[in-house]
Length: 393
Image (cartoon, rainbow, N blue to C red; front, side, top):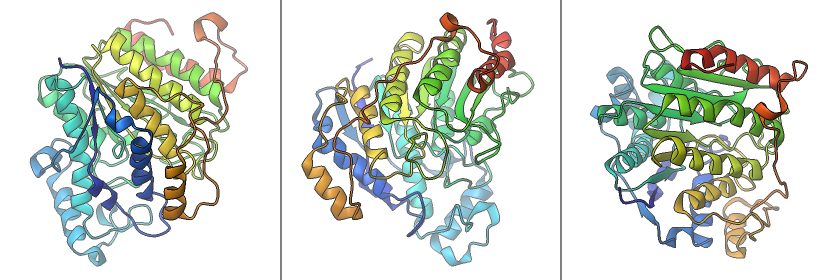
């Protein structure tokens, strides 16, 4: 294995554009890459910036039905023909010209990242344009057309990987990935998200724990609205490392949606960039402790497109490249000027931190508080799946 990292990037991924006013503004991708560049991360010794080919039909078919792929291609050529069938042409997923090409390109980057890691061309690979975790085998959902996370996992399985762990820290439940591997004991999916009573897609209850023959391989930690850094990190560390130890994945795939942030307009958690950085550091460490260092890291949601997303994912790239960005680092003036020119945003972050120093109480050391709503969520998740892995809840 060569070590080092790959950053998957093709400027054309910004063609994934649902149009003016849609929360999934592709400027967040361009701003992230420009921040990576102005911070000098793209020149790191251990990082290569590469572009993969778009996913072809045979690759997309590892997860998606052929009739759905054909439907995406049709509305891609004629957006006016979209009627809402297959979830295309809805408010969440309006059709746009080039939809198939842009979606397949993003999927191709995630599949390329998985290939690079499994073949030993890189130890870590990042595609922050990916993480489109809501798309289902037969339909678009939640701003997601092709499920690149599921496709990356499916490619790993096709290539002979026996166990893949998927960790999703997006504020929304990773429902599409869970659905794709619900009956597959080779894939452990873990999703930490806002409670389904208060947020799309309304799934991800602790009791959702896997299909017949795959019991305990779907893990859900539904968090109460308002959860902040300490609770979020407590829940993450109370569930993930023990399960990874027991499951023994050969590759760790992680999804780093930035919409857990307290400034995000579409959700109700209160997590800082600093805690998101800690979560990425933890994922990196867990990849080395439990998956021989093999780590595929993806983006995801995140709709505070200037203040939050670029910083969170630039931290992710720095961690994967072995050159983590110190939180106190000033955001380059060049980037601030460019961000203003692109978005007209009057205020932009001045440093790579929200000024927080996240800490949390360790579950094993502090014990379970039955009156605490967050502890109730963690306890429910542990009770639902830990016994299936021989672990005490």
